[in-house]
Length: 461
Ligand code: HEC
Ligand code: HEC
Ligand code: HEC
Ligand code: HEC
Ligand code: HEC
Ligand code: HEC
Image 1 (cartoon, rainbow, N blue to C red):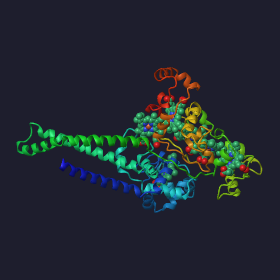
Image 2 (cartoon, helix red, strand yellow):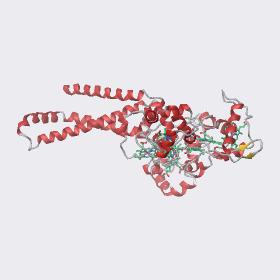
Image 3 (cartoon, rainbow, N blue to C red):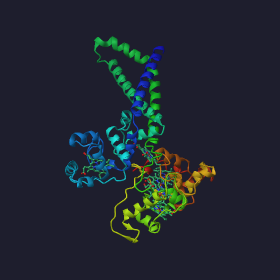
Image 4 (cartoon, protein in one colour):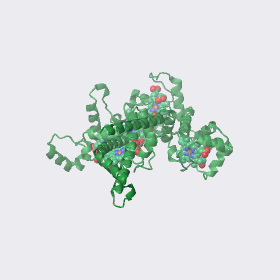
């Protein structure tokens, strides 16, 4: 026992060392992690990867690469990313070369990205947040997603959840130790066997004896490690990809506070598809023009600190430029250009989330459930959207109000009682309801979980 204590300490020290190195890997990043978010939010990752060519070239170390290939600096990359077409049209030799090289595949313009955004993205391509532990842990069935675990871990760290990183590291260490022990076992079995070379038998025997002696300790450690590993994997799955607070700049300064708050415009007037479809979509500029044909300037009393009427007027003017509207002549000019809003909420492709299911079928259940959990009057909600998106009508700039992780979905499914009165549930879950009533009595709580809301297949394709 005493000698084991010694080993125990050594293991602790080794684990501590490993953890501190992995923590320092994470500590040096900052902007790259914002760059990574932007990289994803602007769907750069649909055409680019860092380490391999996808639709476009690999972007890992691109700053250094363009320097050696074409002797151009980051300012060239800024121009390219903002509007590569313009850059090509200006006769830039290298720009035209790569365009030819990629069979004239058009990369979209990203005029919405600020210089700082692009710097962040470039920082990400130069210095992607490294997390070797996470890479090892992510070699699972979720491959091919655009949400990589490095991003997830980075974000988790930003959310003061460094403990998750530690857990992930522990999982990897546990895995390694487990593997070692297995190897050791095989070795011992081999040495115990008849084919054993007579010469080594003395040595092998003493080793086998040693192994037998400490077998219980080994099993004990193995079980603890297995538990830790299980806990780590579970946490990792539940809270991966936390982007709470993500709040990008938009091409037109559109204030939800002024529209949905001060002027009380219904969410669904603009996000009408939330009701019917899987997605909720950003409204097209035609929707804006329904009102802004008649509202060419800002006359409201509410002014966000630091903004004035001239600023708001300028932003409304941007709508006109994009849709090609001459406000003096009150006529369309025909010169249009698209607005590229930055997507804020974006689930990975392998997740199935349906707005209608929540906004229509789940409306009352979600509002009631939320208000029960938030008894303070100020925190209560009247519109279903706010349960997930927060008080958007008080935000000038939309930001993610929740984690939007698997753990977050499941937490609500586990605690929210469904509304048995809505038509959908009445027909589909009638039998189940009867059964549960018999089982638990008529006052039984039926949560989303009870109707299958925790089944993997409901949320994953
Ligand atoms: C629809 C696909 C697509 C998207 C989305 C896209 N790109 Fe590209 N990108 C390309 C292609 C294709 C090229 C190669 C040149 C060409 O054919 O225009 C390229 C080239 C580049 C280059 C120049 C690489 C070199 O070798 O010099 C950079 C930098 C770049 N993209 C960055 C970005 C960033 C940053 C984003 C997101 C803001 C993005 N791209 C989004 C397709 C895309
Ligand atoms: C007058 C039109 C309008 C109204 C009303 C409106 N929105 Fe929006 N919404 C937009 C536009 C435009 C954007 C994209 C720009 C932005 O992110 O601010 C947007 C973005 C969003 C986003 C982020 C989408 C993303 O990229 O992930 C959410 C969530 C959202 N709105 C929810 C709401 C909710 C909830 C309400 C009601 C309280 C509401 N909106 C009312 C026009 C509107
Ligand atoms: C239902 C009518 C309505 C719709 C639809 C609408 N707006 Fe507005 N918008 C208003 C009103 C009302 C104001 C405030 C005017 C005032 O107080 O003088 C306003 C103000 C603005 C302003 C200045 C304040 C701010 O938010 O920065 C901008 C910019 C603007 N709208 C952009 C848009 C865009 C972009 C869309 C489409 C996505 C849109 N609006 C859709 C009614 C609307
Ligand atoms: C149960 C939680 C929940 C409720 C309630 C909810 N949303 Fe969402 N919303 C989400 C999730 C999750 C996403 C991300 C979906 C994705 O990426 O596929 C999202 C995305 C969005 C987007 C971005 C565009 C899109 O469809 O991906 C808009 C806009 C939006 N929601 C508006 C609304 C509005 C308006 C309401 C109320 C009518 C509402 N949401 C109610 C969870 C919710
Ligand atoms: C605020 C609470 C809440 C959150 C957060 C939430 N849901 Fe739900 N969800 C519900 C409710 C309530 C229902 C049941 C609707 C009904 O009565 O049919 C539901 C139903 C579902 C269903 C159908 C289940 C079935 O058995 O028919 C799916 C799939 C689903 N949600 C996916 C998601 C995903 C994916 C997320 C996270 C991105 C999520 N939900 C987040 C409240 C929530
Ligand atoms: C209520 C909806 C819901 C249910 C039920 C659900 N998931 Fe998920 N799952 C999600 C969402 C949402 C994400 C994406 C989270 C993110 O991107 O932050 C996710 C992500 C994942 C990931 C990938 C993690 C990553 O991003 O690399 C795996 C693996 C996974 N789920 C497995 C499962 C398994 C196994 C089950 C059944 C035990 C399950 N899920 C049940 C909603 C759900």
